[in-house]
Length: 221
Ligand SMILES: C[S@@+](CC[C@H](N)C(=O)[O-])C[C@H]1O[C@@H](n2cnc3c(N)ncnc32)[C@H](O)[C@@H]1O
Image (cartoon, rainbow, N blue to C red):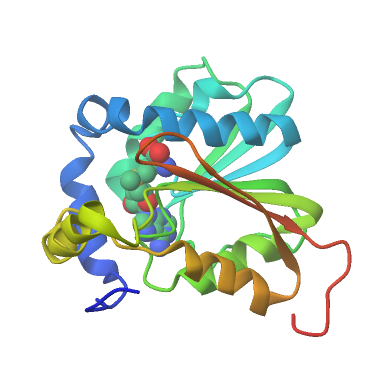
């Protein structure tokens, strides 16, 4: 357990951070996040169909999908979305159908309108992770998957101590090193309409987590 639990990130702080990151994001963060991003898009490609990318950023993942998919991206950062739109307008990614400015806490999509929802390096940054996960589940068809990739809290040892130490300062940069896996598992248990189906280390830093939307809601949903 975390010794000193910080509150979830403040929307304004994260928005400001990504307005600053936007001009340099592809060069600085792109290569660092690539193994995680690729693991998530690979898992999403196995589902295929209509894919929603939540927190799509500058659209670095567009090239990971192919013409068998229809991709829609949302992100609340206008500068990040502007870059994703320019990427989409290049004509290289006809499978990317739309990129919109939208808050993940209130997805403006119909229930059950996607086969898969992907969120790479996002769930740890939102103000209310459980609400965002429930929104992702709502827009998924029964049997569809939520695919997350993140750096998750190491829980113990030296790495955990460093993550706790960096937690406060990381907020201003739009990063969060101390988000525990247990919170994701607890959401699935309490939601009742989503099952945790995979938790896998991608490398020393990133963890892939998959949930499947239940075919039928249980009483807890
Ligand atoms: C670390 S970046 C990841 C971007 C992209 N997924 C990638 O892998 O390159 C986090 C992104 O999440 C977005 N974000 C954070 N909170 C959000 C929210 N509540 N709604 C929508 N997007 C959000 C940020 O604007 C930023 O673009």
